[in-house]
Length: 157
Image (tube, rainbow, N blue to C red; front, side, top):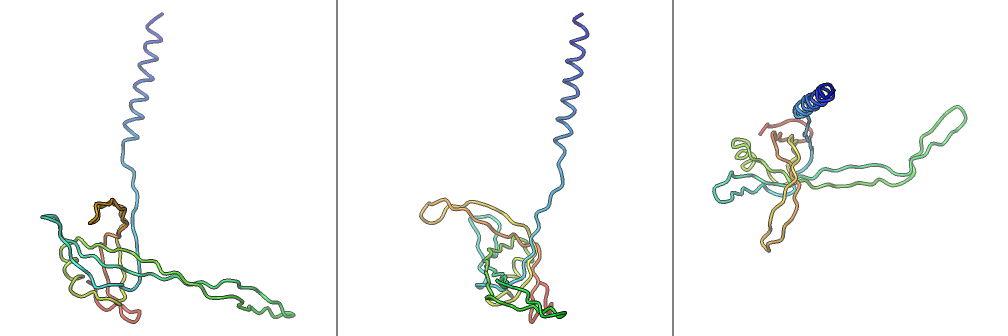
């Protein structure tokens, strides 16, 4: 009489335990960012007491769109009339370069106004400023930086 329920409980426990083990398997995910824009300031290099140095600069990306588009029909001919204004939005991104070779070349060659393509990952962190105030920071950690000029690839940094 007691053996059967105990066996069922043990069986349920083993089944639950194996489900737990399977749920611990890491799933694949992706954190990739690609940005094309203009450098907002000359890069600076920072190093905090024995930690890895980093090259930091800002990058502006720009979006443009037209508001208030409408269609006007004229017999069999359909004309598209543009009514409205062009709107734009500039977004500033903080770029951090930690990879030793890429960090040094970026610091040396990237300048304010340069048009560059950056590939990397987005990172959210927290730091304490000069006034001991905790602040949140979002940064793009660059894996690749490509220097562009007039829309064509010039130099890979």
